[in-house]
Amino acid sequence: MSHESPLLDHLLEFRRRILRSVVAIGLVFIGTAIFADDLYELLAKPLLSSLPQGATMIATDVATPFFTPFKLAFVVALAIAVPYLLWQLWAFIAPGLYRREKRLVWPLLLSSTLLFYAGAAFAYFVVLPIALNFFVKAAPEGVLVATDISAYLDFVLTIFVAFGIAFETPIAIILLVWTGVTSVAALRAKRPYIIVGAFVVGMLLTPPDVISQTLLAVPMCLLFELGLLIAGLYSPESTSEQPQG
Image (cartoon, rainbow, N blue to C red; front, side):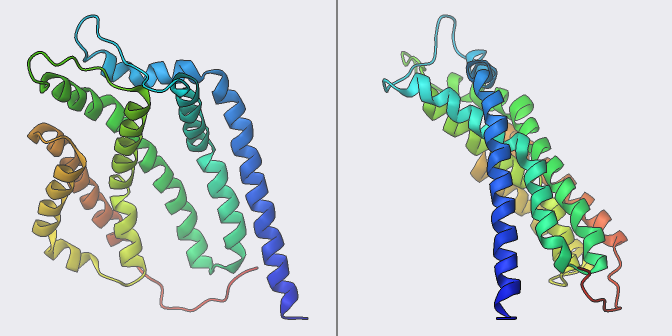
């Protein structure tokens, strides 16, 4: 029974953290749902500014005009609630971490959140206007571009996630060095391959034009160098510590 009680306590604590997270997302969603249409208008602005005069977006399903803005409102609520969700995660795992791990994990959680937001913002303000303008102008003569609002939302969210993950490059490097998988010197030696890989990723995740590919590859290369710089400042401690709880 002595072995089951700690496990039960952990499960109950995990359930409390999950319930708090769900309630937080629900409360934020109530606020974002009120402005669901306004949020979608803001999201559609890069496309609408690229469409020809008089062209509009369309809805191919009857319920799409109602559900699509609320889907966006939920995604926005989830993004807003991320700091609180990470705090709940931190509170759950912190008692089992070493002191050195506690000093490193919290800054990593905070910086990874900010980097993901930065990647999504970069995609919205820089990449989307260029990419959408390219797609609209690439349409054959006589073809009217009329994008479905649900398909556009899925496309934009995919771009946001792709750039958000790409901007996590420094965190990935720090974790690789921290866990001993590789070293800063080894990563520096592989710099030419990393640069080529960044452009390959840019080719796969962006429209097929050099400008859009470069807009993703160049930030990834710069973030790679930033990750090397930060990882180089970290010196793993050789002393062993017991978890604090």
